[in-house]
Length: 173
Image (tube, rainbow, N blue to C red; front, side):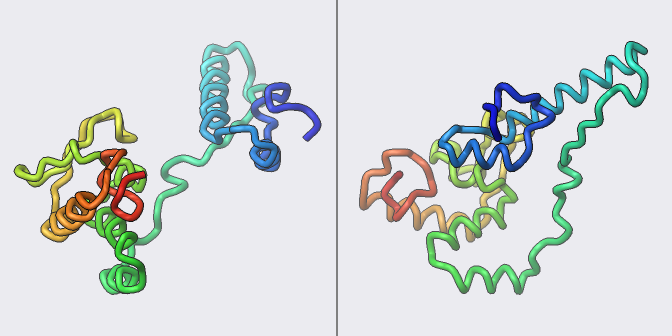
């Protein structure tokens, strides 16, 4: 890539360009280019609908949608148990939380203790912390309750400076 990213049309930035920018130490977010592509696609769609441009004059901008990235299967109970049996305890805890709550990985890994209501047996995820931008309540299973108690006991041994539930070695990040 001879020119910087800003000098190129967004639609012409390739995956190789993005990789090269990252290797050069430039922080480049795939999401930024995707947002730009979505905005361009929608803009061209509106212009075309208003009759300003004809069909083939509007460039085609294809992005992967959630449907394109949809999982085609879920791990069986046996596969899940096999995974748990073959990983270290800290990783087991994260997998268990993912499996029991159907939360996204980032939601589990960034979860602070103040979002857990132990008395009510739920996790309260505010709109600002979830992809759907709507408040979500997740029940705490008996197994997850045991894991949370285990994490609390471990974190009492050291300073949890991040206030997150999942930490490295139980002592904060």
